[in-house]
Image 1 (spheres, one colour):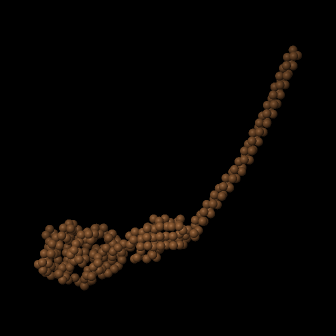
Image 2 (cartoon, helix red, strand yellow; image 1 turned 180 degrees about the vertical axis):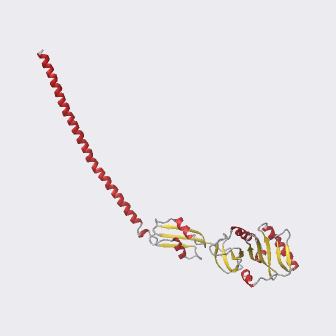
Image 3 (spheres, helix red, strand yellow; image 1 turned 90 degrees about the vertical axis):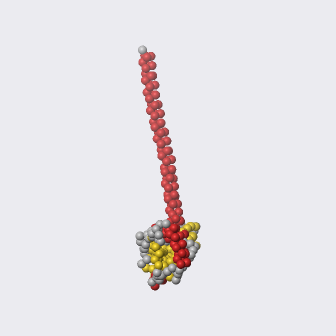
Length: 297
């Protein structure tokens, strides 16, 4: 019985000792874990500080680059213009609109080309930017193709290019075709597309000697076409009517003029608006002084 009691007491003692060891080991483990966590936290603090330092350096680098790119080194200081004869280089530079502080990075080629093309005398413009701060502008100018005046003001003539852009005021000469338009004419304006179609037809299809005989083509408000031409010692009106079958009407007119000249007929006007030509004979009608100034060279 005593032995059993002693054995039981040893077991209780062993259990108690095991529990003490367990508590000691648990405490040590907790301590080790806490120490490890502290080491990790300490390791993280320098990394966070390092990231902030890197961000600050990047920020300062970007700021320095910004001020560097905006420096006078990249500002425009030279503009070269080629191909301009009627448009001044000064006007082209003004249209570029490059301010004193404008830099190479503030503009693009296409935008500058659009600015320059606001000058109506230019047909094409090519702008190239080169480092540092140099602009090269190459232009091609519109060329006069004929003269135009408003029917209501035949004393003021203007040159017009093939695309119908009115260029500038100029005296009418025999060098180009002359056209009387039903609307006011001013530099920078455009000829109506319907009128431009008729004008191009005459430019492409008038043949000698008829081409030299025509003094001025008149385009009406309703689209009717007429022209004043030299006949004999004076001038006569030829009415073509609507701009239809113009090729046939010009051919018919050439044949008719040849016949009348052979007959030495005195003609006042020819009307081709109908199925059969109407020739009014009496004598060439001399133009009044104002019209003579507009239509005679």
